[in-house]
Image 1 (cartoon, helix red, strand yellow):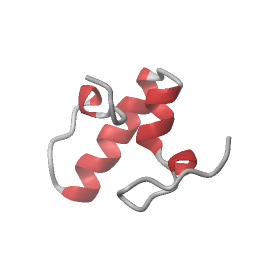
Image 2 (cartoon, helix red, strand yellow):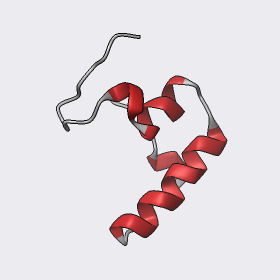
Image 3 (cartoon, rainbow, N blue to C red):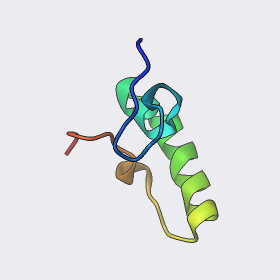
Image 4 (cartoon, rainbow, N blue to C red):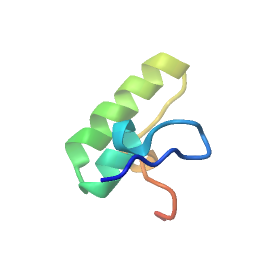
Length: 55
């Protein structure tokens, strides 16, 4: 994949949200939600971890 830099400034190919969405990986969504919940002090759920354009 070519390097894509999103409007958030992250490189998509390194982004756990992008990768979980692109790979349709529920375990990665769960891990990312747990990590973001701890890091940002908010309650993220696995279903909140979705890439742009995903409903």
